[in-house]
Image (cartoon, rainbow, N blue to C red; front, side, top):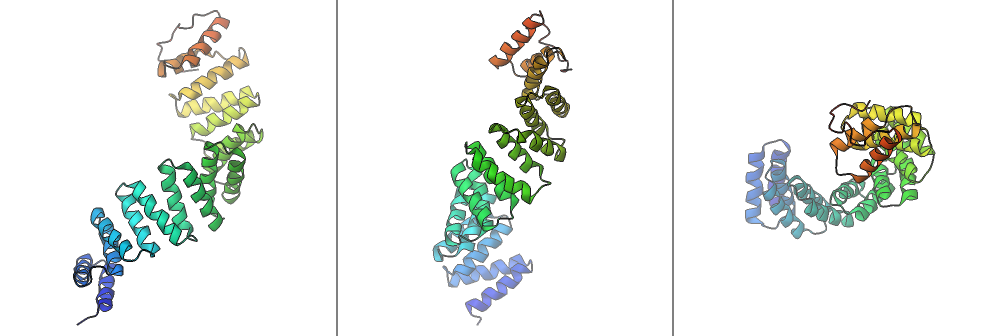
Length: 303
């Protein structure tokens, strides 16, 4: 009669060979004999997850964790099963425990960071992304994600430091340049113009990059170049209300280079509930001796 270890070895051979029916039969037989056998619970749970039976997988992996609480791999696979089943909070809890048991695993820290971010736990996400970056300093995405979250939480200097790491590691990665440019622009640093130009050059089809480049150019009073960036953004997304609004401001600042009124009118047609746009339209119209509401229902483009 085969020992438990011999039976488990045979089941694993079937499992790895894709013979899932045979593997399941042996895993189940082992658990009938030894219900709390941790390796069998873990591998059987993993097989159930791999074959799409996620609730059954979670039940088995929960038992595996209970049978051997100090095994980080069981907790990681439990987290994966919860994540695949659409339960991010439970997944994060499993990954958190796995990282506690194995704090030097960057791949665990990185997945946990993403889960914390998606759950809106920005402080925890920042800590996990920074932990990942310390463990794997050449992982640009960890620096990028940490920097983006630091900027969103008002820690601009820390954000810039992280994002500079990201662009050094991946100089061809437009999102890293974009986030760095936004962080610099929010800090009032003129370097943001060059950085956002680089982001736009790397990803010329992203209207948000061009909008943020235009914002930086406006901060520097470079109205003509800002108008060009906004025109390019509008060509990519004709219904971008923020682009239309800023283009109206730029045209108004340019004093006669182009008419701002069509931009404001188009923006208000798309989003009529914004009071500041009505004010801007009224001011621009008054300067041109026109009624602010003239032509508002028009479907015509901002030219």
